[in-house]
Length: 210
Image 1 (cartoon, helix red, strand yellow):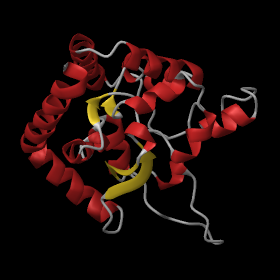
Image 2 (cartoon, helix red, strand yellow):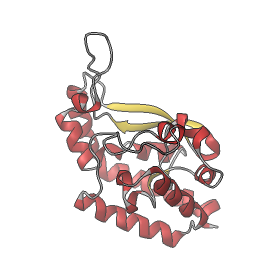
Image 3 (spheres, helix red, strand yellow):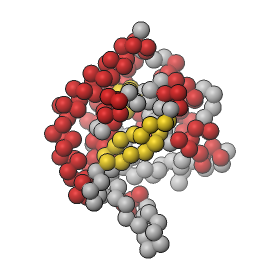
């Protein structure tokens, strides 16, 4: 009952009232990033959701689009703006995903939606992550987030799906709030600790860190 029906209702209500409550913060961050990123406060990227259906995730844009003399994007560290670093440290960059929840693309709790390029590299058990809507936070996020390796992170996602329940979602939500307040397990620079999953699996798990 919860997985098939009630979870979606709770998600919609949480996202709706969450956006109302956070609207002042949403507007302030949006304006700050509008000026920091030359009129581009949002980041859109295709991600696979439930049933591997592709949707566009919405986040606050924490990096600008500055390029080198050859037209190549500068490194993530060089493009990360001051306000972008702040919204990452405080997890404010995730707020626009409440819109994804309202649209039905995502859930409040579930496996994080990863890159489309990773689809060929999941094991059969890891593909369980795509039998439910992806989430803003999940079991992997409250157990290390980006500080744990790919095998551990994807194992947590599969465990979440196998044990999906209202009680477990409440526990994950409460732990997420605690982690956000304490700024626990936050990696400000993307890819700072681990390489991409496709590279990690292509290399036969020989090279984890960048």
